[in-house]
Each structure stands twice: as C-alpha cells, then as structure tokens.
Image (cartoon, rainbow, N blue to C red; front, side):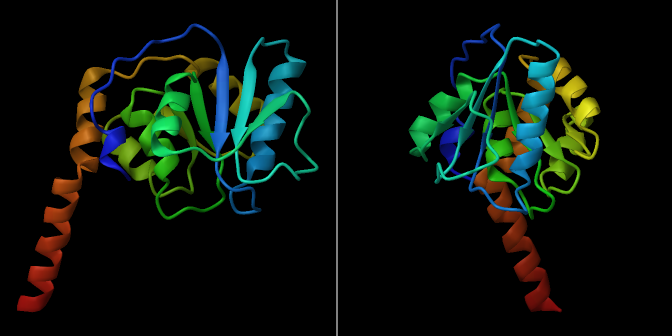
Length: 183
C-alpha cells in the first residue's frame, strides 16, 4: 500500500450518499454482491449514487445506473475515495485488501467481507461494524445505510495508520527474519 494514502489530508465530508467498489471484475472479488446491494438500495428508494472503478466495461450483470469508471492513478484514486461515503469490498477471499485500507486510512468508511485479510486490522482498531458476511443482501444494505458517510474516530484512524505504516511493517518483517536466522 502506497504511503500516499497514510499521509494526512483535508477531508471534505459530503452528506451525499455515494457508494463505490474498486477492482478487477472476477468471481473471487464478488462484485455481483455490490450490484445486488445497489439494486436493494434502489428498491428501498434510498437516494444514492454507485460507482465501480474497474478495468473493463464488458460486464453484463452491471446495473445501468452504476457509473463505471476506468482504472486511476494513485492520486486519482485518492481523490475518488475522498468523494465517496462508503467503499464496499465483498471479496469471497483476499489475503489483504489494499483498496479498503487505502480508503479507511483517509477517513472513508468501508464495508468488507469477513473473508478479507484486512478484516483483522479493522477488528484491532475497533471497526468491527465495517466487517460482515455478504450472504444476506438486505442485511448488507442495512449496514451500508448505517455506515455511509460515517466518521471514523481519530483514535481509530491513528491506530490504523500506525499499524499500516511502512516503517512499522518493515521492522516487523525484519524481526521475523532475524529470529528465523537465529533459530
């Protein structure tokens, strides 16, 4: 994860209801669940906008009222995250999850699958409400409505940035390597 997402920024919290997903469209990324949640929110008449940043526009299942955007530079993604109320990551499996960690480090709430590695970090800093199973679309839509535009406490944000800091991670890796070399 680039340090650019950990550096402090001025955040303009919008009251608009904007949700988004970012990533390549594949079965394991489970973006069809994002589409289902969008449809459920639309059915509820919850006035929102949805965007999907991906590398292809040839997705047959995508609802027409979701904005499909092309991949972006790191700076472009940073601006994109800051314009959103919630980033949704429904992966069925992911070893870590850079997208949600980049967004949450900028103060943008996320909703991630319990099967993502970054869920452990969210738990460590007290953001368990941003983790759930995506099996029940109605429950996920409820959580989206709850989280969208929510603030992240400075204490939680600082803890996240400390855990994800490149220097801290490098020191942990070095310690493991040194210990393994001694054994």
